[in-house]
Image (cartoon, rainbow, N blue to C red; front, side, top):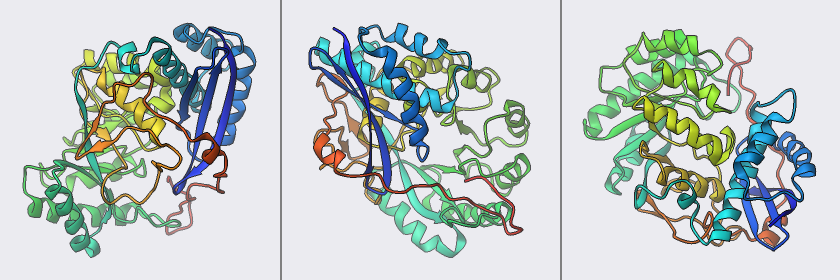
Length: 387
């Protein structure tokens, strides 16, 4: 078996573009992968084009060797652009291997350790005192539908132009304090701050709420400095969920070894595909840290994340944007007629060969990408801040 072609497909799916990688073998097997580097897809397309030149004619079953060759056969190895491209290729190669062997991908990863993939619910109403009634309505509806873990977004999150961290933490802390009183102690409650804070701001935010208000704080600050996270770790007892920005096991290593995160947010479509994700998860297992995969994209990413989660002994919960109040449209059935289905609050694991996803390629190619750029946020004084 040999690789005949490696191709990128960029198209609009719902409110966001998705970048797929299609690997075709000479015997007709097709594998699909997805890149996680949203809004910088053109850079990934260029990287895939470089790799495609030397992948043609290679045995697609030599997945580990191909991973090493892509990573090491350049002086400036790694980085988020290159590993996002590698991720999509690695996922597609696993899809091919599963189809060739007539087994689901999770069988290639050691077999499934669970029958379904439990998820946490994403809540799309800002945790703002002015929207408390609306937030309570959404959270209560999720609880009534059986969700026991809910992640919210902070006050000011959806403003496309302005983000004031101090105002946001003050308002969000007040809102979450009231929300916890209303929903009681039994629901697991987290928040995603999307790395928009500093160490001082994140510490202040946590200290404004009584112990037990939050069960996890996701990505409070950027991850370039493990030492900064080590400082923050001494200033609050709220568990951290960190890792969606990691582009290698080496990036994850200090956060795992130093106990800087309590949930490892591995992104299969960014860290380097299954090959690298499994290594990061194994490091986490050795330190009694559970994996909570980052899954913000479409059906290929969801399928890959589910197969990854199925094979882990140290899996916690899956992120999903297929909940009842999501309007993103990332899992459009017209473009992906076969995909993993959410059954209540968990994904059902298919037993079909490969990833268990089919792409309506003609329809996808007729859904051209939209102009997309993440918000360029500024503070009240006009300075640039993180999105």
